[in-house]
Image (cartoon, rainbow, N blue to C red; front, side):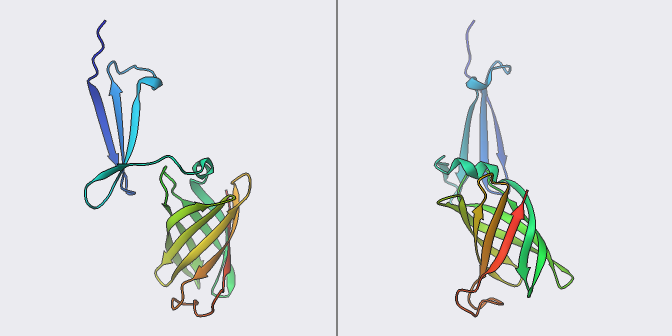
Length: 169
């Protein structure tokens, strides 16, 4: 029986700009070892680069929602923190909390791993921006972190000021 290497390509471009290309050789009932999967990151110049799989393995466990607390406007409030790790670094996330009776939605950008189960991100919402440094538990099911506002953005007028941000799956 002759094997034809004609392939079906499926491309999905997610909101993250990640292009996932899956080439499935005929016959369609081929086993998993015969399926070639490649991921490509698209940039604004319409060029593409292969994503290097050199990120720490533990990042795969972060995807999802962590429920916790953060300090904001002088009090501790409930927060939902979501990490959107999809295989490339840096990655993004989001958060949602209520402050003074108003829902605040924000984004986490440039999230990158640091040594010893730590993660650094930049956060931004409608009023402020700053940095977030997180230490994950060994189970990766919880984290404790500190957020720092950028100088000149809201609270960020005191050097080295930082506030609690924690979560648990």
